[in-house]
Length: 133
Length: 321
Image (cartoon, rainbow over all chains, first blue to last red; front, top):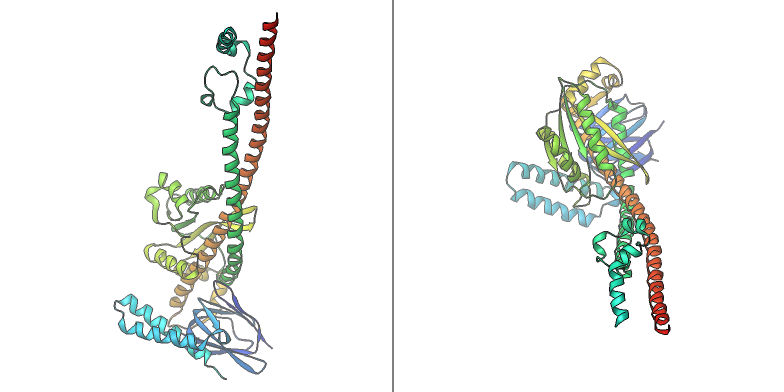
C-alpha cells in the first residue's frame, strides 16, 4: 500500500509520486502519515517534510501551508518548497547568517515577526541540506 | 502667355467642368481639408502622406502583436502551473457560487494598459450584473484591481468601491506580492463571500469571464453543518492547531490568496492574448487600407498625367491652327 504524494507551490509542482510514508511538522508537533490514514486536513508549519520511498528517506524544506489527506492521496500546498538536493549548503548558511543579523537589528512588531519567520526558514533550509539519513 | 491665362481661368472653373474623379472613394480616405481649394484633383502628395502614416501604423501594430505573443508565452506557463493550486481547495471546500450570504465583496481584476480588446469591459459588465442580482437587503462592495476597471467603475459606482489597486504588473507577478495583496484585502474588508471576477484563459482566441467564490470561515462552518459538499468537511479530522476554527480561518485565507494568484495570472494571459488578436486585426485593417490607398494613388497619378497630356496637346493644336 502506498501513498500518492503531491507537493504543490504557487509556482510549480515540486513532487508528484508514490511514497511509503511521510513525516510532517505541524503547528502542534510532528505527525507521521501511513497508508490508510483517516481523511484529515492539517496545517503545516515551516519545517522539514521527510519522505520514505524505496527504503530511503528524503528531505524537503516546506515554508508553511496545508495538507489534505484523502483515501491514500496526500496533497500538500505550501508557500514554498525545496528538495534537499536543490539547496546549496553555502548559500543556505549565508542566508542563515543574514537572517540572524537581521533579527537582532530590526524593530517594530511586524518586522520582528517577519525577521523571525525568515530566520526559521533559513534554519529549515540548512537542516534539509544537512540531511544524511 | 495666353495659354497660361486660359489655364489659370480653367483652374477656377475646373471643379465645375470636371467633376472630381472618384469623389466617393476620396471622401472616405482623404479628408477635405487636405486638398487645397481650387485644385483640379487630389495631389499625389496628399495620398502619399496618408499611405506613409498607415504603413507606420501597420508596422507598430505588428510589433505590438509580436511583443504580446512573446509575453503570452512566458506567462502562460506560470498560469498553468498555478492552476493545480486551487483545485484541492475546490475539492475540499467546494465552489458554491449559489450560497446565500449577506455581505458580498466583488473583486474585479482588469489590466492596466489598454488596446487589449474587450476583456476589461466584460469584467466590468459582469461585476455590475452581480451587483444588481444580489438583491435589496444584501450589500455588495467592490475591490478593483487594475486601472481600466477603475476608470469604468468610478463613474457610476464610486460609493461602493472599497479598495482600488493599480500597477499590479509593474514587477513580474509572484506569489509573495499577491499574498500581501490578499492580506491587505482580508484585513480591510468585511465579507461573507468573496467573488473574484476575471477572464480565464482557455486558448489564444478564447477568454471566458469567470467568477470564483471564496467563502469566509463562518459561512463555511454554517454550510458544513447544513450538509452538502461542505458537509464532508466535518468528516475530516483537523490537526495542527489549537482549534478547528483557527485552522479553518487559515485555510480560507490561504485559499483566497491561491485563488487570487491564479486569477491574476489567468487575467494577465487573457490580456496578452486579447492584445495579440486586437493588434493582428488592426494590422490587417491597415493592410487593407493601404491597398485601397495605393489604388487611389495610381488613379490620381494617371489622371494628372492625362490632364498634362491634354493641356500639351490642346496647346500644340491651338498653336497650329
